Length: 294
Length: 291
Image 1 (cartoon, rainbow over the protein chains, first blue to last red):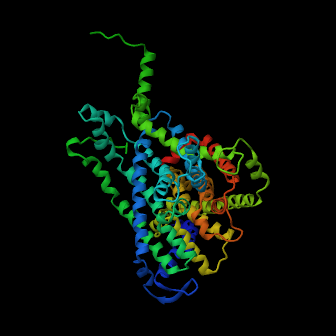
Image 2 (image 1 turned 180 degrees about the vertical axis):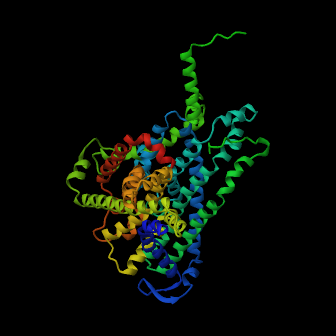
Image 3 (image 1 turned 60 degrees about the horizontal axis):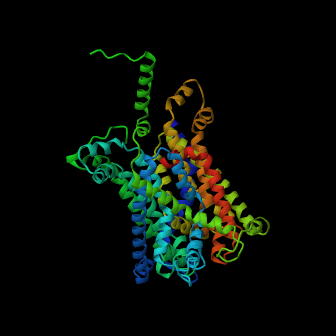
């Protein structure tokens, strides 16, 4: 009888997630295999039309673009976040430095997007300054292109990358770097061959935390981007609310889901091996990492 | 060679200090190693500048007297309008607060119970529960929003404040479950066993041992849920209906359909609110970041 107690405690959560998470997901899986209704909705008839419609060059272009924007933005974010996380971890005043990163991060999502419109807009802060300096008389259109979308995406998701990187680097034993330097490694070598392999898990987490939400981005390309920066999220919303092609919206959602969760599970599965790689990173420079520090 | 002994008190002091250093490891060792990472420090301050620039611009423009973005002089006009002449905005604000606390309460109750179940007992579906609680977190928001919208349409639920509440509770649940479980894993299981040996029943163990011990985790889960809910735009955007406008949705419509400088004042107030809220918590931020 005791065996069942845990189940009773978990029951509300199981039911809630089954009804409001699993069932909706099940419905969009089912809808993606149905025929499109005349005025929205679906006809109860099996069809692969929605998946065939995804081969439409328009959607393929957007898929490619979404992938491209997500990869570029994630790499940029990681490159910037890595030294930041390192700097916070080595600082004597970690709390204050974290505070400065978290304040913008906890400021409302839309307020931050709006702030970038206020900076980059035709009548915005940047054009204002250029005009005041008499560099330009007419305004430059900074908004509504891919570059501005990538800039704002990096801005939005930087803290998502900085925080996990910080917490991994904070657990790293910095004396290892000194040891490497004593043994003749240059500073750069000591970072690349000692620090990076040891904080791999943090890099992976940071990469996932940025890539997954950027891949499903909706609001940023909608408000900051133009026609050339439409992403998959915007296509899904349009198919759902404007074109009212629910099977197609479901099929694209399914694709996004499978791509992102597939990626996460793939990486989560190979995590145990990673631990070992830390030691195998370079057989010539085998430095034992004290147990308990990881 | 005879080395003069240091006075006893000093020897003890050194001994204690070494022990403390050994015990504290990283933190103490760091003190003796000056940070030489000037490059990463420069990057850090540039990034902080980058992160704060938009917030600074918003605050600056909120005091601008003109309707245009161009600077035309100092004024409190937009703050006055924000307080006096924006009933819809206040409606949206109250909706946001109701949804945030309502969904945080619901998800904290359900998630805490599930965390108690999986942390204290083993049962057949245990790994199913923890896996299923993890998946909603890794799905892109747009997929959660779209699937809920289609679901609500399918079961014929009218879109509005209620559907927003359901959606927010759903995306808050995994975070609550995770935070509370993490806290429960840390606590000592022998305390519960001792209570049981001393004759406590299931209810007494739950309310007098398990829940009080997990209270910090439960509170931080509740606050996280409140913030996540106040923050959400994408999912709310899909599942909302008449009467279900939250603050982010209101800001969205202001951005989309005619920007009034009132939005600058509102944003500045929200930035100030964030700072005031987080500053007292700054010493706990490390724990938050490390989770």
